[in-house]
Image (spheres, rainbow over the protein chains, first blue to last red):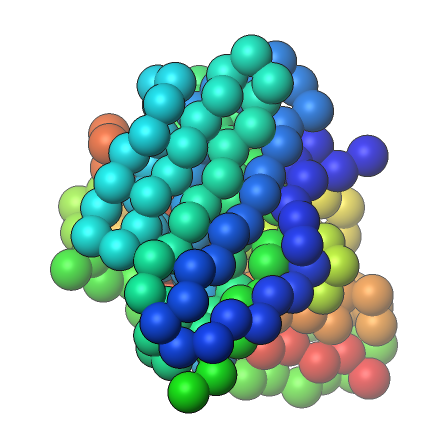
Length: 113
Length: 111
């Protein structure tokens, strides 16, 4: 069973629009969440982390965490073609000292001009 | 920006062949990781290490060995490669702040 579930699998957004991605953990021990972004032909790069309930904003990106439901979302405001990428949600694995990350299956975002 | 270099970038081998994937980081990070990426599975942890000579088992270790020879270098070994190991492999490193820095990946095909 996938420990980190992401939805939707893919998403199309017009340039300037809002993209919303979802992620849920299946284990209450997984409480520290990360978002990574991977452009085609590259390795994933950390976008942002969120460890506390509520919102965290970094530029056009806002993450929202609800620890009670183990749900985190990522919202991309004013989407740009350069935001077209594969987005991964990840959680710190407490059984490994929180060092290794468990990744979801990803959401592909396509931003059309 | 943290630097993680993987080699080779592409590799083709036959079933039963031996393959070594190399990773070097110049960030003075203690932790290094090997992941594989497959459509429908995301990134899955194979092995990781918290220092030279140390090796920890990940979630999908079967068929893989790894060795951390120095703080900078981490190798992934496939001694009897199988077609199921055809995948995109990523190495990453991290410091005490938990952020993982990934290399550009090695695409491996086992025929």
